Length: 172
View 1 (cartoon, one colour):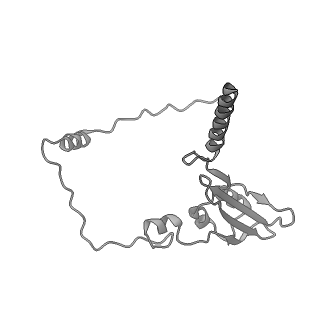
View 2 (view 1 turned 45 degrees about the vertical axis):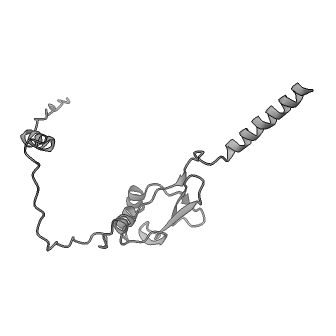
């Protein structure tokens, strides 16, 4: 009787631990990515009048080619990081009857890339950089005899190594 009670308590405890392991905080949850990765730089390369082949080279194969709308390509991308809320992005490209790009709709639009907005560069994509009026920063030399000075001397003394050029093949 005593043994049975101890065994039942032990099995109950092990079962509770097993169930707690399924949702225990700190358990690694896999990131789930699905679809085509589309970047703002890819969208910025698209131009009206491009052929389907040119668009496929830039964007890759579409995720969805609709049977009822053969002139529309849909690119979908979703990610769910570690069990959090799923995020989804969508881009639809429209082609004319002669297979030329005529339209773009979705979460991405031509203009400032997300990378530029994150880095704080407010220039539109493709714009020429604005010249800075600040004087160039002077390079500070490392203290003589320091490790940095030794490394700098080695870098300055390094010479380019010649690269062997392969002989052309004689094909009869």
